[in-house]
Image 1 (cartoon, helix red, strand yellow):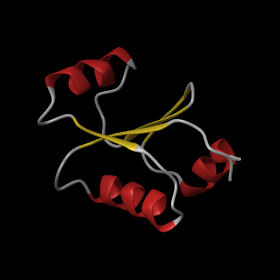
Image 2 (cartoon, one colour):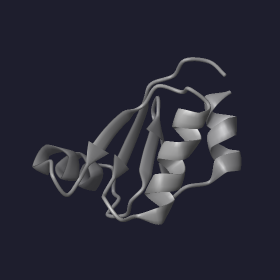
Image 3 (cartoon, helix red, strand yellow):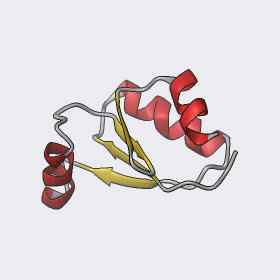
Length: 77
């Protein structure tokens, strides 16, 4: 898979967020983790993406709300 910029907007105790983190880590895909409960700037970024749900994942300029492994694999190439 190619190196794309990946941002994961997440929060503690969110099972789909944990699944997304595991997906990236197990495949050694670098990603930026943003905890929207601890970082007001990250929460504002999430809202600016027209999302209030976690996980919200940004791969380059593509926004995915929720965790969809097939779509993620497609976005990552």
